[in-house]
Length: 424
Image (cartoon, rainbow, N blue to C red; front, side):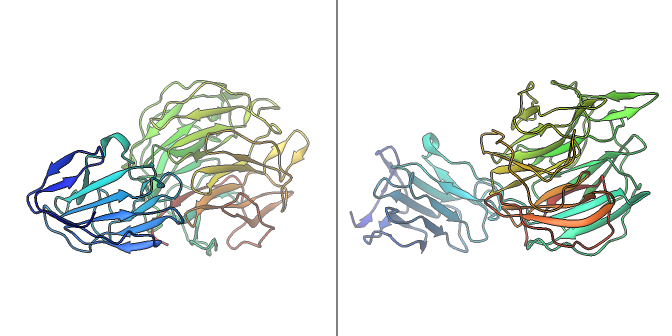
């Protein structure tokens, strides 16, 4: 088909819908890996041989119309990626990932205004929701150097750990941290049985203390979920003996910590947590009391619901760390088992399945922290061997842990870390 349809456009269902301005169908079928499209045109996109990134116009007016169609019914094999070129797409900035991955799909785009931007029409049956980009940088903060500290170390998008920055807020260890709001971070709770929190903006600046809510505790874990929210869970206090919790506290996408919610599953401390599958999370491993270490996991839905115990795999241990990698998978590594410090790791699929032990590389240690960086990689750093260390081990986007790299900054243990910033 070529030429101009004077008063109609083709919808994905095969029906013909009216349009006031008309639509010119570009006769040349697009087979390249990139194409820049113009308003008022329809395009046939053939992804038989490769995926295609479609760049929308840099400027648009209300009512501008573009239609793109799966020419060969191959978008399920080789997707298309929409680059909104500085304009919003369904109200989201162009830092969000927009992909269409369904065979035979077509998308009819109408530009609305600067707030909502491009809005896809008539793709309701097979619409793909935009996915927030992953964080590019990370921050390690707080911990125990022999005494508690509030120093922090930023990590750039290449995995380079920067020198110490004198922190703000109450020095503490045994706390937890997570990404929230997509590109910011929160540190919370910690030694002294605190329920304080400290927000981190998307430039890596740690804010002053915010009086927390919920049960003050330490040696808990935290992760993001739902794409832009976070959750703190579990932990303990010591008062003539350990009191161990299965509580959770949800964190909104503006960094507000909610009150306690009674958790499910085995109460424990010294566990770890990570996001997986793009918008879900997981608590795993830990100490359930005395010398009892567990390899349990509890999955977290994209609405923050913590599921019941699932018997884990691999060596039961505590004082380990976890990070996502490869955009939708995760890795748990290091920690302490009944036999002492370990360097083993366990990969997590994008369905939340924990794999068997993998012999690690680098120095076995406990009390380590981990975070994502570079969009699809992870970094483990610091910890305790028979002394505090400032080592780091990078994780590539296939989940392979690299050898030790001598870190910078003050060696310490029982710190926390999280990803932040969409900008590299």
